[in-house]
Length: 85
Image 1 (cartoon, helix red, strand yellow):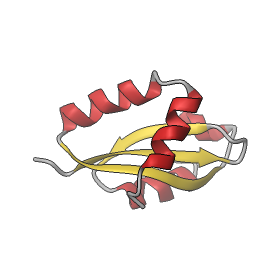
Image 2 (tube, one colour):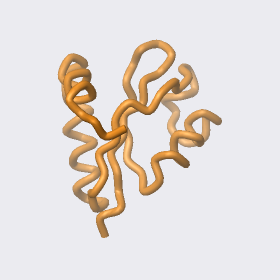
Image 3 (cartoon, one colour):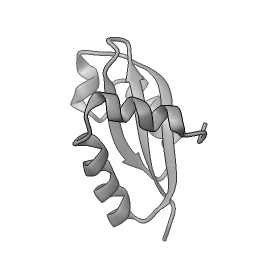
């Protein structure tokens, strides 16, 4: 099934968080309530800045790992080039 998405959230400290979900809006709300990822215990999610849909679970996980390994400048370029939102 191709209903997984990879997403990037910009946080209040300017950092970028990358994750995967089958429902990005629900997952973003969970992050706002500090449920799930420990990353948001010390920072607040501000804005969903990137969504890449059409993945299955395996391809979404691989893409997440690939994006997480990118340099910040590369991530910002990816966000700027995407018209996904």
